[in-house]
Image 1 (cartoon, one colour):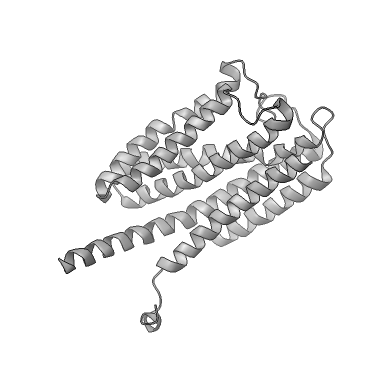
Image 2: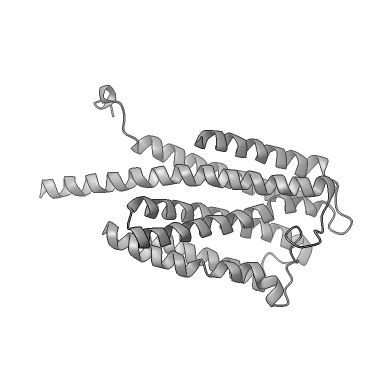
Length: 40
Length: 224
């Protein structure tokens, strides 16, 4: 069962990390509203 | 719509994990290891879809020249690389207790590794070319060449004598039934939805990155 858990864990962790990378990078590059431009 | 697809995909994935690890019974031959079938083939299927979509939009780009098609092609290729790597890792985790080795130069495994190398090369090519037009054109050509490996991967278990098992579901007489079959189908559907969400999000990010790239180039030129 350890191999099964490892397989599921690697898959979920891999997809979650990749999704987080996309979301965070999008937030960093997405244009902000004009009133927040200066604080960026 | 994209977020709704993401929520559906996530829900399906949670359902697959719960059914795969809990409800479904162990196999008579494989025992508990059969539970990996609910994630490994869906990951492989999604790899095919991602690279096929990448090649389709690469062809559209070469035909129409619209940069939007290049962005979708690039996004789908990158998502496909993630799915392909996970396919190889989960297969390796299954192979160690079943075959006694983490890796063997079996036709299915080798052709899948080649697929990963080809699309990793595609991503490397994109990073190595500065001119956006040349980058889009050359990477589109590479995507069309690389996608030709997919039929080789899929039919490798029929073309050669391999260790890898034959198809389970996609055959006239499916070798799986009941809750095991439905869990596998749910795995296929949810992985596909997760792919759609990731590819859509990555495609938007590709657009933002290209805009940022143009801006930084203009800023550098303005300084000179």
